[in-house]
Every structure is written in structure tokens, then in C-alpha cells.
Image (cartoon, rainbow, N blue to C red; front, side, top):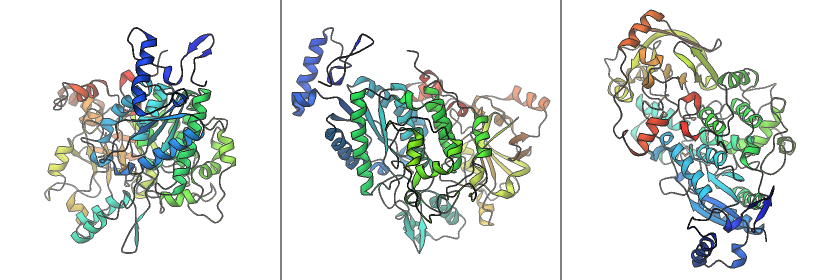
Length: 579
Ligand code: FES
């Protein structure tokens, strides 16, 4: 029977229900007890002798992006059973962007630990990880990498677009744009109320090329999900079919005991993912997440390599926030497989995918949709180079990132006066003060908003233009911080400055009135203060007071262990497994 003990290199390997028994000092009793309890669920011996496919349940009333998860679970179960295995659904933490205090990123590592440990602790031969809302797919990929049990990732898929007064709306690029207009007084109270009912009109994840959509494309590129699974709309019947196929595939992987995530997510697969990230004009967050996933497998992502890819690979996808369309249009234009076809010379097509096909085979079967305009060719790109650039300089010795595809071309080379906000609280208190000394050509600096400083490195990097300038019609300014920003945001925003201010990074030493140069073509972020003066300021610098609650529990663990942006904001102790 498939779930009996198998032998690998002479070592007995338990599978199915017999693996990972609870420790009572008597393995026979442990299995007897396990069977006795599971029989309360009405399972037959035939069912319990099958290979087991675990399925994560990340449905939550607090997570409307995952509203279709119950339907997806049913479809996955159908696929598993059609292939002769036993599906077992289990809950894990679910994280929604706007329902997570202080920020969803604070909880990503907790979700990854929860998912990893539940995969390890419970008997399963493979697992289907169903996720989607921003931090969930990264957490699940991190868990899959660390648990290293055969895994198929199934994104929940993007929402359909919304409509308002003849305009197409998308969460959350248009959330920010219209909120900006409301703040500037050009959008009425009634209109903003009505828009709030139409921005997220269906189940599924944000339908612009934000973090969720970006991670959907990355799941496909890494080879951890089936082609199309990153972009089929959440409410389309094709999504249920890809769920069924994912279940079927996971059952086959359970029988074969492979391939394992470490065989799929190789250094070449991560390079492919970084290449697609540049070509789709994807979310800056994905760089942090990929760094964290890769680190779990002992693969080091170098910021310089990412920048170098961006100098060669054009942005080809015409989606908001860098372009004009939405995920459903991307999908019907051929989706990620078609995109990869356009940049295949930059990819390592030998990489394996969960379906046992190579990336080349996936790309060869991409649907060629005639006359589509959403996925461009390298001869007719949206931007001739990639979506993101890595900056260095005395203000960011360990790097910073800018999504120049969504920035103002006029600000790509600019020197201006720093206007500094010491924290998110300081920004909230003074940002809209009509007496704030700030001009359009200044550079806004926000600090103590990084992994330790905020804590959790919130998506605060695209903070609002000061009210008095917004009301005067200023739409964009250079903003620099150690925070992240939503993948759905746009503007000339320098992010992930490392090391962050809270651990004494140079951002902590900037004073209002200092001059700063941003030079994206030269990849420079420079503070015009000489080294002697900076050393004098450093002597006087004091670390911010510890946050409330940082002495205990998960908050305490986070403060103690969280790494910087260039290390993926993972916990130090969650590196690659040694054995
Ligand atoms: Fe869930 Fe945007 S809020 S993906």
C-alpha cells in the first residue's frame, strides 16, 4: 500500500498516517491512538492507508481577500481524491493587509513558523498551500522552503476590477490616488464613500501589480505553482480547475515523495524570479520576500545582481501602478507564461517546476493571444529597463530600493533640502501642519519606520505629500525612509534604507536642512554632510526607547531576532536547516 513504510538507502521511512507519530514511548500505541481518534471523523481503513495531502485553510472573516478559500479547498480535495490520495485540511494563521496591527509584515514570520511547524508536526506526504493576500504567499514559501516537504502553492487569485462614474478602479492604486484627491479637496465626501464600496468588488487579492499579484507571478516563475495559477481571476471557474489540478498534482507528489521545494527553488530559480520581478514592474516588497525565502535555503540574493538584471530586462507588463491595465487583462493576454516567453533569453529555462516540466516546457506552451497589448515585446517595452533600482551611498551603506517605473522622471536626478520626520508619530503630528516649513523641491525623510523601528517595517514609505503642498497641486516629491511601501503605490519613493535608523543607520543622523542627492541613473543616495560632522552626530545619537511589549512574547522575539531589509526581515534563527 502506498502509505506503508518505504526504504530509502536502507533507512525505513514512514509515510501517510504512520509518519511523525506523537511520542508516547511506544510507536505501536501512538499509531493505534492516532487511528482511534481519526476514526471519529468516519474515515475507513482504505482512506487512512492512502498517501496524505495536507491543505492549508487560510480562510478568515478578517481576510476578505481569501473569501474563495472554502471553494478552492473543495476543488483541491476533489483533485487529491481523483488521484487516489487522502486530503486533510488544517488551519494556519491568515493575514490581511488592513486587519493587521501594527502591520502585516510584523506577522509574516509568525505565519511562516506556524505553517512550517504544522507541516512538520502533522502526518502529510505533500501539502497544498493556499494563500494570496500580501504576506501570506511569502510566509508559505518560507515555510515550504524550511519544511522541505513536497508542496504546491495555490494563490487565491486577483479580484475583478471595480467601476465608478465610467472609470475603471483597482485596489489599491486607485485607493491611494483617490484618497490623495480627497485630501487635496478635489474629491467629495459622497464620492469617496461610494468609491469605498467599489474598489474591492469581489473576493480575491488586489488586482493591480501589487505585492499579491507580484507574488502570484513569482510562485509560477519559481516553479512552485501551476501555470496560470498566479493570475486567473479569483471568481472564475478556471481557478477551481487549477485548484483541482493542484490537488491532483500534490497527490502524485505525495506518492513519489518529490520533488521537494529545495529541488525546485534553486539559485537559478531565484534569479529567474528576480528577472520576472523586474519585467512585470512588480512590488518592491517581493525583493524582501524573495531574499527571505532564498535565505531559508542557503541562497544569498545580492542587491547588485538584482540591479544588474534591472539594467538589462525591460518592463513589459502594462499594469497599474506602472501602466494602465489590471490582472484580469494580464491573465487573458497570456499571463506569466507569455511574459516569460518575451524574456526567455534572460531566464534559465532548465529549472524544474512542481509539474515535473522544465520552465522551457512551461514557456513553450504559453498561450499566444493575438493583438493583445498588455504584455509587450522587448522591442516595444513600457520601460526600456527594469522596474526597480538599488541605490547605495553614505545614506544607505547596505542599500536602498526605488521603483523608478512608478516614479516621476523629473525627480530621477535631484538634490534638495531634507525635511526630517523622526517617526510615524512625528509625521502624523506635523505632516499636515499648515506652518510646516516645506517646499515642493525638498526631500522628505521618514525614519524609525524599519524592521525594528516601527516595528515590522510598515508600508509607510509612500507617506502623503504635506497637506499644504497637496492642496497647491503637488502630486509627487522624493520621499526616503527605512519603511516599505505597498506594491500598489506610486511616486518617487526610496525604501528599505539599510541599516535602519533604529539600529543606528545613517538615516538616524540626518537633520532638517541637510542636502541630499538622489541620482537614480548613477544609483546614488548621498547625504552632503562630511564624515567628521557625521561622527560627531553619531556620538550624540541615542537609540529610540524600546516599544511597549517588546520585553515579552512574540513582540519580544521579533525585536530580538528580526534582520534588516537586505536580509529579508526574517528572524536570525530561521536560516537554512543544518541537517
Ligand atoms: Fe489583500 Fe491587497 S489587501 S491583496
